[in-house]
Length: 243
Image 1 (cartoon, rainbow, N blue to C red):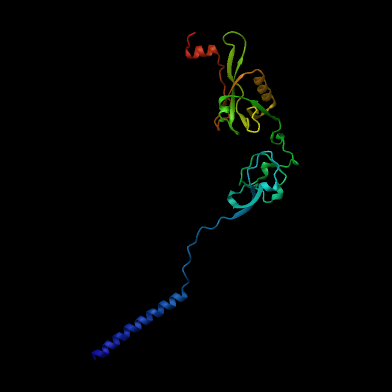
Image 2: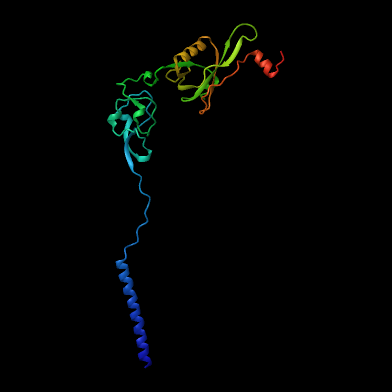
């Protein structure tokens, strides 16, 4: 009797185990596999024309200066050029660094012309202002800087013959000319884009042999500043210098 009971109990355990295994097998076959973790969607890319090398301003673009490259769509300017034929033979209005997209606003159809006049705004002229001031000589005046010109000139007679004043203000430097290995006799000068009247003032300061110093403005300051002319009397009265 005890043997029969034990046998029945063992049989029940076996059947329960087989039933559980069957249910697990069926469930794993029917249930879909767990979804893979979704990674970030790849950003769409756009194929555009970029500079294969640094392209100077006022250069006629050739095929060697261009290449096609896929860039993230959100990094491509709206006016980016998609076809090389759109850029070939065009003249650059600004320098274009290697790897940057070529955009239509930086080019002009100049029929192969490369002169400086292509980048001069109407009503303006391009002038070179020779200067040996310390900042320019030290290389601290760069393209894109905005400068003021401090001039000391001889006026009248007597002890106050020399007067110093801030003259022209907020002039943008277009190019810095310096002697080079190939042109050691090249004059150091700042190239400026100015209106016709300012061009005359620059010429007068040069012809009058005024002593010139250049000061560089903050990138966010463009308002004209009113200054007081400095001469011997000003220094004596302001700083209490004994005569």
